[in-house]
Image 1 (cartoon, rainbow, N blue to C red):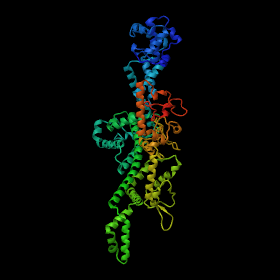
Image 2: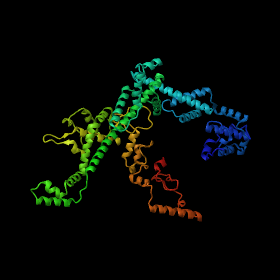
Image 3: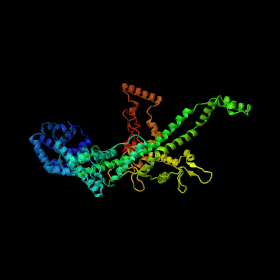
Image 4: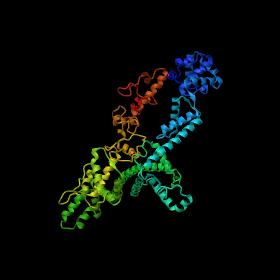
Amino acid sequence: MGRDLGLDGVVDHFTLSGDEAGWLRNKTGATRLGFAVQLKFLTWRGRFPKMRLELPPDAVEHVAKQVGVAASELGFYDFTSRVAKRHRSELRDLTGWHECSKTDLVKLVSHLVDVIWHDERREEQVRAELLRQMRVDLIEPPTAAQIATIIRSALHQADDRAVAEVAARLAREEDCPRRLDALVFTDPTGDSEQDDDTASVDGDGADEDLESVLSDIKSHPGNVSLNSLLDEISKLKQVRAVSIPAKAFTGIGVQVINAWRARASAAAPSHLRRFSPEVRHVLLAALLFQRQRGITDTLVDLLNSTVHRINARAEKKVTEAFVVEFTKVRGKSGLLGKIAAASLGAPDGSVRSVVFPAAGGEKTLKDLVAEMKATNAEFARSKREVFKSSYSNHYRSGLMKLLGVLDFRSSNDQHKPVMDALKLIERHKDSSTTYLPLGETIPLEGVVRKDWMEFALFTPDKGPKRVMRTVYEACVFQALRDRLRCKEIWVVAPTSGAIPTTTSRTTSKSGARSTTTSSTSRERRRCLPPNSRPRCAPSSARWTPNCRNCRGSRSAASTATARSSSPSPSRRKSRRTCASSRRRSARNGAPSPSSTSSKRPPCAPGCSRPSPRSARGRRSTRRSSWNACS
């Protein structure tokens, strides 16, 4: 038998109305009960039961009481007999339900295409929409094979319709189809009717060039290095040269675009040439559009990683140099006294003959000088010099080219000095002067750190202070990295109006949407201390800015308390004591302390629902009351 529905389900789905009870006036016994059960099962599931095992027992009991027949009489009703078939035919006439015909199949496929063509390609979602529409149209579901055929046909027609729509938008853009064909055809006109033998003889070298261009666009970046940075910049320029229309994929779901991109990524130029022009243009456009976004995100990651690498290598190099030179000199006070006494005893003598013997040799004095240099200030100064040298001699060319291909934005006026500094160094990126021009407004506050201020400013004997250009550029990139990691500054990604999977977090004043990538999301989470993240995290799909003030958002102290996984010894002892008392109470037949209080406290002030409990019956500290009350 089927699973019991419960009282609410039985009352909602298996209660006969006045008209339905009138349809039973000429039926008695098992026939009366079988007819009523088939009627209510049809209105509940949208189809007739195939056997008695599909019927919930409590539903059968409820219907039997309404029709005045014992529930056991249903065992004498054969759902495959001619009487049951005649009942189903009568019920179709009475309720308006009908079997699925060829006309219905065509209408259902057309409806599915209208619903899913722009953003849905998952079979389970298409199946759910199909069954829902069948209930609306009072159509009995066909066989499983027919349903699979309907779904396949709808998905195929939906993809064809989406391809035709995007291809029409690309065709309206001047020379866009020709630029796309240039990626796979040796002839810029894209003549797909060229003879295969002629193409194999005349176009071998050109095919290799096309393979190289497409493989470069499809390739992933290498390790963090200047060459990887320059390669990604070159790929981004190649993709932008094709100039995909900004609104080519308006209204098209991201999963549909990703599927097209996957097809184009797996196909060689020779395979793409075999597709129809419309399909080929759409696949290549999806590939270039998604790769443009991916390359943009990669360049942001490379920028962050490059600045971090310069800093880490400078620190490693300075540390190694200090370790080699550093030897701790002990007894400095006594050594100073010996040197003073020797100097006073022979004031006219030379340093080598008087001071060196008193200090224990020249090596001791060298070690003493190295130790004095190995201070925090000296270490930081040496690190800044190495950072500046590594940046200006190696990484500067790539980072300056990066500024020319990425569009940085910020909607917070607090970070306006960094944005102004970026524009300033970009204007003077081809300059070979040591200092920035005097006529420029150079933002220092919020751009140059305090420990770099002395290193970036030069005070001549006469005239105003000057700002060293390469040092200032290094400071700007460090400040830019900090803002990018916290998403106070972002990079504008190419927008097409595609239907996103999640809502964009930030919108600038000019209306440009921010880039939301997995890498930047991880950087965003790193900026928050682990014990200060709210339970209603911004990564949740249900999160809104108002969640900061809701009861589900927790402070750092409460989060740290809830996340402590190792209880104190006293708490563990109390748990063992409570467990022992519960076992003794169970043996003696007395209620345990935990069972005496049946009413749990509310999950939050002002909430009428009790607090959630974990698997062991204790109050859960990990589940949020925001989820419990939602």
